[in-house]
Length: 308
Image (cartoon, rainbow, N blue to C red; front, side, top):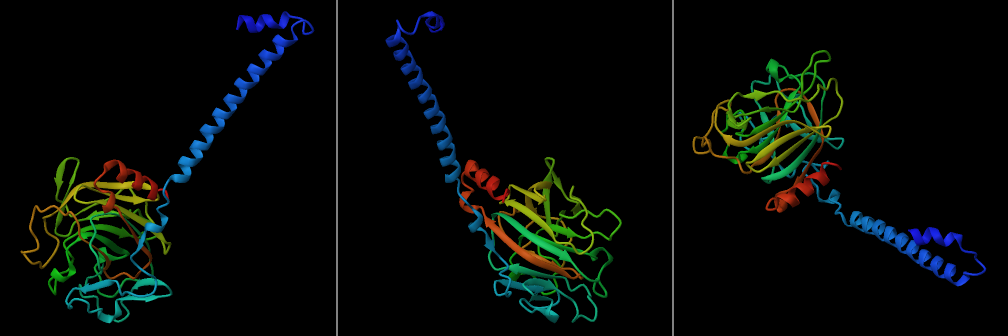
């Protein structure tokens, strides 16, 4: 630096070649810096452009046209008997209706997607509409759910009320009082919370209350038998671990199916009919099983799809 400063004291007419040489060196150095910065920017752009777009990898469980990919089980009725057209498709929506019921009479229903899954992100868009069916339980007003890791519907008994499963409970507000959605209920199951086996039937999430007939999006991140996250508006509102068979709140059941203590590594997904009309306009799933062997890759994919 001292020599560079000293050179300003020289007269240009006597040291023209020296000045020219030093200016050339400075220009070359400056060009190298610019080229380096440009290369760094281009590298970043290449890295960004190479990040995979997962938006086309979602599986649309509901196709918006029919129920051909679904299996229906309504309590007191045989498998695939859609009593009173409870589950139907109208205007591109999957609708749950009770206009053909004289009384609900504890005819709890579930519509199962045809394939079981183990690691996945489930996204459900729903809204409660109208009034509860005559004869429905008071607690079932504006109440439905996404049943996760459910037993095979073919193994349910004719009069069985709920499948052995983990329920992501969907609730609607009454217009005044707090009533959070995306809670956990456990028909024939238990989970681990804060390091201990959690045996109460339901636990309330940290989600807010959604009143009226607005559309609501609920997401459930299920990672085998390790952990389940309930997500609302991009935020985790409930987390629990080691879903497993156990406890009550399912009746009747086949003892050969209800093996208490057995971890739920995978299972079917179903949506409920519990006496209040509800619409579903989107039921989509991202299958994470192909990435489950690598924690790093699994987390990378989860980060990408939860930002979409």
